[in-house]
Image 1 (cartoon, rainbow, N blue to C red):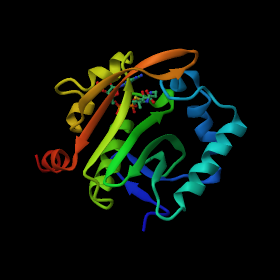
Image 2 (image 1 turned 180 degrees about the vertical axis):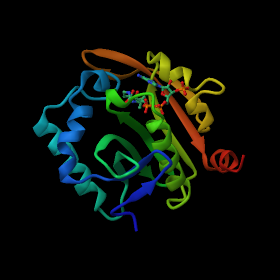
Image 3 (image 1 turned 30 degrees about the vertical axis):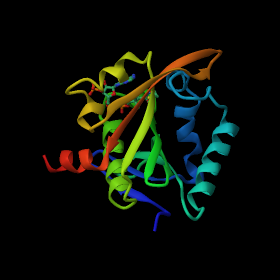
Image 4 (image 1 turned 60 degrees about the vertical axis):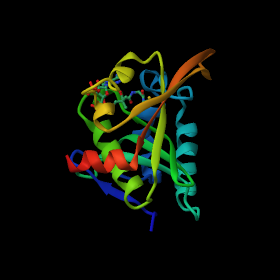
Amino acid sequence: MTYPLRLVGDKVTVRDFRVEDVDDMQRVFGDDRVTKWLSFDSRDRSETQARIEGAIKSAQLSPRTEFYLAVTECDEGRAIGFVRLVRSGSQGEDIGCAIAADEWGRGYSTDAHVVLLDFAFGSLGLEKVSGWIPADKAKRINSLAEGGSLARLGFTTDRVVRRHEFINGAWRDCNLNSVSAADWSHRRRT
Ligand SMILES: CC(C)(COP(=O)(O)OP(=O)(O)OC[C@H]1O[C@@H](n2cnc3c(N)ncnc32)[C@H](O)[C@@H]1OP(=O)(O)O)[C@@H](O)C(=O)NCCC(=O)NCCS
């Protein structure tokens, strides 16, 4: 059963979107500080609404391949961001996350990744999960270095792709990073 999904972490609950999340998610999709690093430009409210409605619709498809989920504070309060994973066979692709800028640095993204990876390697039985990071995003790239938050989750860099995406009028180089089920279960045991 993958809908509706509700995954509880230490700091956040990750759950399927609801139509009531539109205003809260405008803090994410409508803020240039956040979207500057995503693969789309800032959205107005009606575009955010269409995005949420699309996520709700795709969540109910069978088989479900897209897990585009709200990140909420643990008490199931308002949505403060999203985490997303696309399932492709035994692989999880395009794992990505964004948190409202006023909430950065509180460990929400890390915790959202933990619950999503537990779900991906546990309930979905995936063998590998990968995602892209803009190569010019120094803070995020640094978190792949030893001891960094992405490294602690088990992510390592597979390759760097030059001119991977065209955003805000410019080409951007990106890193493809991944974590395997074996690495994840090892990390969860230690
Ligand atoms: C990247 C992002 C999701 C981190 O969310 P967060 O809840 O602040 O993250 P956490 O508190 O769990 O910290 C996780 C890591 O993110 C890093 N981080 C914190 N603020 C950041 C920022 N503004 N930009 C990038 N990384 C940031 C932290 O340094 C930490 O890494 P470290 O432990 O190795 O130092 C958030 O800054 C964001 O939404 N940025 C814009 C969208 C984006 O870049 N998404 C990821 C695309 S690759």
